Length: 277
Image (cartoon, rainbow, N blue to C red; front, side, top):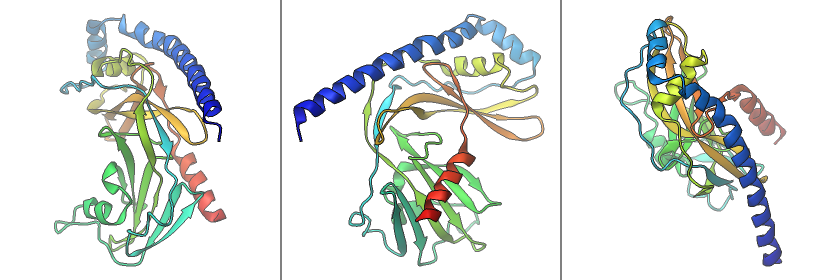
């Protein structure tokens, strides 16, 4: 391999991406700044008028920046330490594992507890954070974390655990990222209040709703190569509607862009890949 040529190619690719990211930053952050100039008082008045409840402590992130990561390529050898399960590796990037022993995900009180399962039966399971428990479909979704923060809805950084009527795990599907590094220079970030205010002025926060929580994390910005992705700082604003429905909104913390995830499409693609195997 000609390392000199390889190095040159990477320098050129990353330079092009830097220009691309900067153009996105300038164009899309303008919208968020236009929202901010309305003023804090005006936003508070708007939320009061719409009866939107928002009274949460501030989450401050000083080390929030774009990060890059590589898609993890699994090998049979490294997974040999995972016991009591039958593992199939799909496309080198996905683990599909069926349990050969009964493992409960309920504690003595009848509450869900995945800690023991993640620690003993999942490759680097401690890196995943619980996102959603779907009791009706008997599955739970976990997001991989970086710097302790979740990567929202990246199909390459998700873990899904399935169980039966006895709350014992039947199988799980896992994808993972590795080799994280800070990417691009740090830029000014939308604060928590600015993120919530931006959603309110754009009409995403409905009348008589309550902001339950604001969480910092990451979302996919661009796929640099087939193996490398770049992730952007992202705010997750969880809201409870008047009828009790829970909604999650996601906002790019640098550009101010509202992000719409398509989880159903991701799940369909994963299922098709497994069936092909």
